[in-house]
Length: 295
Image 1: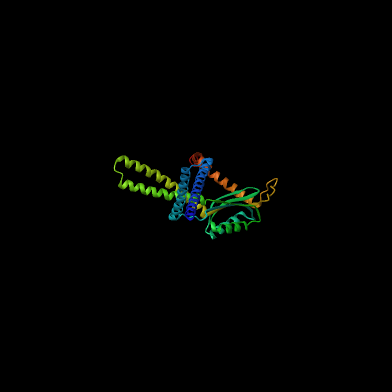
Image 2 (image 1 turned 45 degrees about the vertical axis):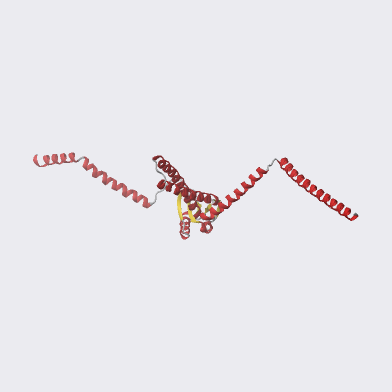
């Protein structure tokens, strides 16, 4: 009998312990949920807002991945596009000779002189010209031209990185070409009414203008990148000679003046005969009359 009572008491104790543990776990879970809701309320964030932000982040990642795939698909040239320019001023012994040598240097490295301006005064001779040269020969040509100088007044080099602009224009151009192709497909297959046709043609006209502007800009950038510009000022100083107080002509100058004066006399006398020929004829007639007829 005592054994049965002992067993019943053990079962009651175990049941009580189990119920106590279950209630503690429920209260802990409730506390955890309540604490989480309190934290969200404190930060001003709601579960819906958090889910929306996570969706937006997922969309951003997806867009970035799609942009990378699009860039790889379009095969955009991502090499550096750098425009190089330089200008220098050098003193030389002879401007004409230095200009000729600079032209030969430019031709040697597949370049050319785009413009040239020569000035000559009593004190200096100066020539300014611009060399267009392939970019890979830029440093060689600049050093060779400066090597012609007796003295280098200055030498400046500037670079402009247009890689970002080039890539941006190329990507936009490819997109516009794709859009133009879609509009052309719509114009051929789906445009039925006159209004649809006119609207599609208007869109195509605007796209064509934007495409031509982008192509022109790309062509300009490509030319500037491919050919660098070197502007060169070469000059030489001239020591002015003192002018004599009075000019004294030499013998040859006097002989030339004499011949010129004699020829002018002959020329004037000949012209005088043409002017007074009536008087000459009248004089001859009077002479003949008095000499022969009257006699």
